[in-house]
Length: 312
Image (cartoon, rainbow, N blue to C red; front, top):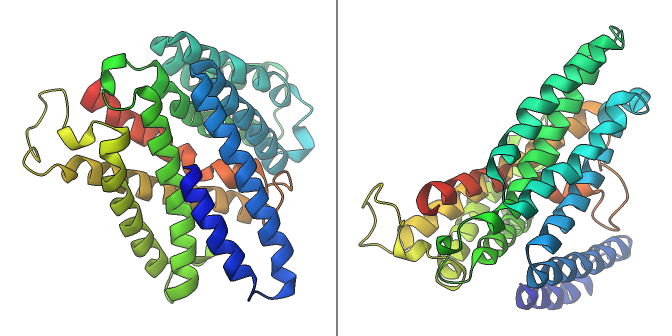
């Protein structure tokens, strides 16, 4: 990952020499932010499950704060704007302990019922649907879905005989972020036909297809280094593809690329609905935390259950 960032930094530095002056500052800021994020992520992976859970918990908390401010700014001080933050450490505690059952039910069941019940009991009928649904959906998307990225470390140790369970996390994050960058770069270079013009004018079919192809190639190349995907599933669910080592890794890459795209445009739709370009200015040159984790909110659970189905 550090090697990829180093190569990308060199390429970015070369490109900046011919970029307009008004773009240089933002792109240098973005590059510095990337270095900070990658170093934090690598450090957390080296330190183990608690550190990874802590890193994603911080990202979830910051993302949830941005989401609530965007979607319900006048009511963030109400009950659904305070106690919901306490759900974040609870959800990631299940990750640290490796407890799957409470991990699966805390947000989708318990929080859904508590948010609806307490909001109704408080008598806040005006804006009830908006307050209850935005808080519930924010927790589902930004806390529950994102927490699956850390939950890989709670899988049985036998699930990844190549690089340990940390290999799944690195594989997911590296492919998701590469997919985002590849789609943007290919779209900027060759994009002509917009995918969702009402949501994001910068998303093109050319960028999407070429970005997916780039992610597929990287998924196949990295699989033998980080995952057992090239050996096929450990469960006897289907023997399809055993003669072709790249089948399962290519499928994993496709799932991450496509789900990441939908995560990206979903958050773009939220920002378009409230009339903002970035979720905040937290990350210099990149916007807010939501702008950085949007693709992971979809890709993490999709890839987790793919791996869980094949290897757990």
